[in-house]
Length: 362
Ligand SMILES: Nc1ncnc2c1ncn2[C@@H]1O[C@H](COP(=O)(O)OP(=O)(O)OP(=O)(O)O)[C@@H](O)[C@H]1O
Image (cartoon, rainbow, N blue to C red; front, top):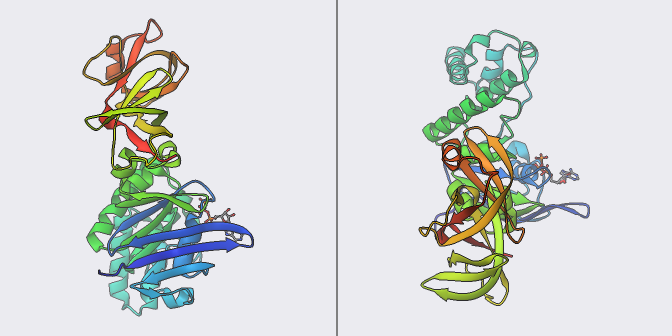
């Protein structure tokens, strides 16, 4: 088996009696774009710092091309690992800041100026080339810092919330720029963010962490369609989590006794070993449809009442309640809303297909 570029093998990090990272196992391949995602304090930055050599693991091994680098200092890892930092030299101009890494690599002046200007152009900040960095906004500085790192074309780039100071339009622009660059240059990106939209828009694989532990690793599509536990189902997208007691199986469809009647779900590879225990499943809000009448095309349908609506751009989130008081959310487009009419009047049905339900671990 070929070895991974980077591997965390049973890595934990304790600060006194607090466990910041708990038994992290992750292999990263050459050229991958990996995002570590999770809420504040879940151990993302600590994991990145262990890879960069700023923290030593308490247990386990960090490997670079199969060799343990636990005891290598950060400066000994600097090639090929580069940590993107926001710190810029205030006494240098923007272009001089971007040239700095190349100067350290002894690249001749005309060549380094040419490369620096190209990166300023790539990041849409060429017009500020001669300005001092203290004359820039926070977002402009963040782009200079990125240009300064990318100009050296490192093999592995470690990025910790690199777009956090940008406004939402610029974040979308920069996501496009970063993904394109990453594919073009084949740099391995390890990217820390708490933002689901950033992680899902750019990464090949996303590592979802909570309280120091990996919850799930997968492509954005996998995580979205097949969350494997309650935490991921609650964290990614908009999921309904429902459950019931196993009753029977017919042609790969399980019947669960729920509070409002039977749920039908497609049994998947994630089938729990114990059928006698209650089974929970996730159904994404955009797979829950709403109509005035029963629709026999769907194998799950429940009578509902509207409890609230939330407008999110061109879509509407409907907060529904079944007869037993079960909460269900449905994401519908404005166009579908127009067909449905005034939902405050009368009853209607929420329905979904068994094969869009995904069993989640207890
Ligand atoms: N040097 C340290 N000493 C003690 N505790 C630490 C230290 N560094 C981090 N921690 C703790 O470890 C936990 C994980 O921190 P980490 O910075 O990895 O989180 P994070 O997921 O990157 O969060 P954020 O998104 O807020 O940056 C936090 O509870 C933090 O307070």
